[in-house]
Image 1 (tube, rainbow, N blue to C red):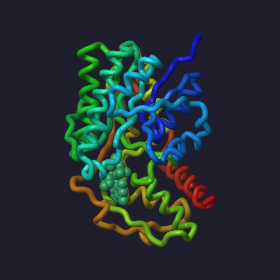
Image 2: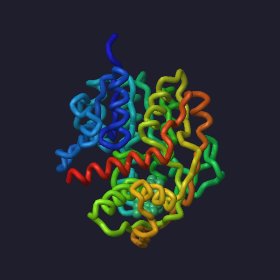
Image 3: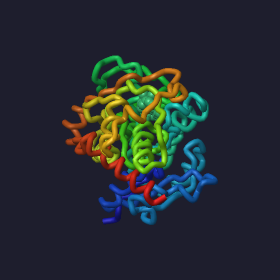
Image 4: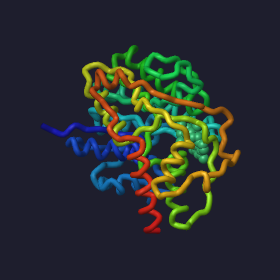
Length: 326
Ligand code: GDP
């Protein structure tokens, strides 16, 4: 049997790297769409970290340029398409709202049109986000909870979510949307609060920094491990019917509690090192998110396996190693 072909956008990001590793372990041929940039030498840093950099094939393309996508899809004819590429940092979406609209919203139309025109049999995964719940309308959010986006990023993701649903209903595409709650790992970008904290813990422990300035310590998130969450993406595409699924742990903790746990990993008290700087605050905040993944459990048989404390320990350990090598 010939290997199945998977095409991943956002392959150099946290989820793209873990998903590549997972699909390779399942015998897939893994391809990535790569946006060429001047910083090309660091693009596959995460894939290298996971030891799979040489095993994926990269194709030059850009999510905002449908012609580049059509060319790649016509040549490759992928069986499964994972659309993980986006401008994904919430705070930057206020600074670059139009770019966010193009890279996070319109790009999903480009991808779906490309699938429809070039390989309508392919199965499509859209990376939707718990940020779409924003000012939450129910204490625990499921697939039926109304959305209330609170940032240009969340508004753009909402477009991506609904256009995926619409192409499924309009054209019968096997298109699924995974509403993933925050998911972290040692490969999380440093601009996100979890990595900023574990990196800060490592610096402080090693005497490379004295303090760590954060923003809203009272925000609460349902944090899981990216390695667990990418498996839910794959499971969605193995179902006979496409659908939408919430992927979450069902536990929510504050940024403050995350700090406490991370500093405790190196026997320090976060209160001695964490300060609040208003420059890290946002024009509109998402105060609390808590997911209900019952549907994913029931239909996909998916379960998160990594506990928050284990994930934080893994992240702190990895950042200590990185800083010791520097
Ligand atoms: P998001 O949920 O996708 O926005 O993920 P982030 O990791 O960027 O932010 C999670 C929460 O942490 C938000 O409510 C932020 O306001 C809060 N937060 C507090 N301090 C910081 C900080 O210094 N950086 C970031 N990125 N977030 C912070």
